[in-house]
Length: 226
Image 1 (cartoon, helix red, strand yellow):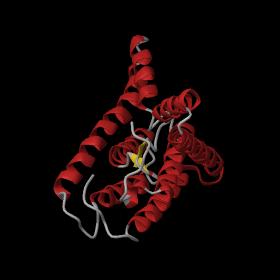
Image 2 (cartoon, one colour):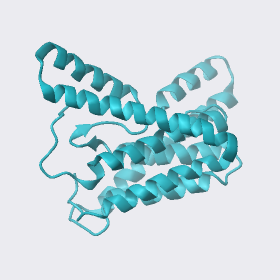
Image 3 (cartoon, rainbow, N blue to C red):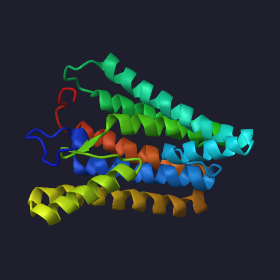
Image 4 (cartoon, rainbow, N blue to C red):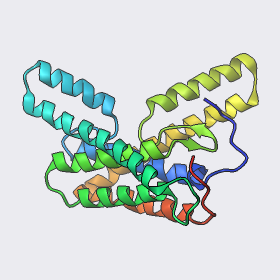
């Protein structure tokens, strides 16, 4: 994992875009858990564990509630890959990652008006998968905007490398990872607060955040692929 940014930074790898995506990711997880039946739309590891436990105990309807977002996550990854393939690799006014954002925005906005928790969680999981598949770096450092375990591992690894070897670039990379984790936590905390006031409509904050990220990405000429 490299911690040194490339000389030409893609708009999608900028710090402000990362912050918007990560706040949205934290909010989505808090929303699906607190407002949509205690299911993690983003953290699929938890859903796999709960699915296995429910199945082992013969609670098949509970198992299904965890299988739905898991399946939707897989579909979301496939959709993101398809969007990239169809968009091609040449520079365009609208980058393929922006097409992904448009799809995310639509899915999350629709989920706010879905009464059925299973369907709403499926839409959120698909949106999350599209985001985590498409937005993988901030200033040259790999990260995840919708979950924290990889960020925690990476941050700790680079912090230890800094302590052991004293290289400043490792400290900078560790700081990026811990910043992502802090922003994710802020998004989750904000989600828990706004849910009390907006209920199902709280998820509409995510499309707003992603719309701002979309706009920020067209402020610079689009770079090709990557």
